[in-house]
Image: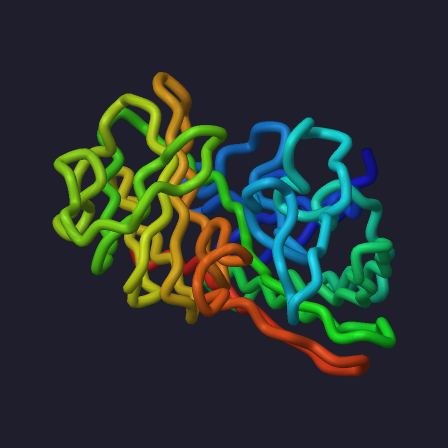
Length: 274
């Protein structure tokens, strides 16, 4: 797999155009991984994040059936951007710019531009999607980072409530009653068990503390997906522009309708604080 390297005096980043994936992100001062260098340490989610019930939804009175995914039998899981080969538009000592064109019969027809950049102790990801189709279509974006997790890592973020996980990993009814496992308002070590839930009312900030390495996640969206597998050395804190299955929720929260030439953006930062 082709890989590209960005490095400054604080951070080392390895990027793969295949799937626009981050393969690793390390703190040079701490000699520790920030993201878990598994198959993919981070990937973008577009033109939607996560799953849509029935793999279909209604838009302006018409039923839209989403494409089939080569990696999931039921869902157009996380869209297609993470599964396609992106073009390297530019590459220099500070940033890498990747682009992708993709289209489907359901109405998705887009050009995406993704910038990965290092600025001092900051890793910045900026994703922009522009609709190219003749008919309007609804879009959502997200990032799927795998943060490195040690047995003593502390995680903290706030939320107004969450959607418990139901059948086929789809959300149940929203609840404002956070459970002991799902409450991260006070920093804690994540439980060593399965967790796969979406949060609302997130203020766009999360802290991950592993020893003397303190990392902050920043993204301007109120929706955060959290994924944890027992006995695995990672936890996914996934900023999404919309909740899981927003396409079938009243008001389609967080999704945006784009006409030809219209764009939507999502920016995420991972900052080493100490």
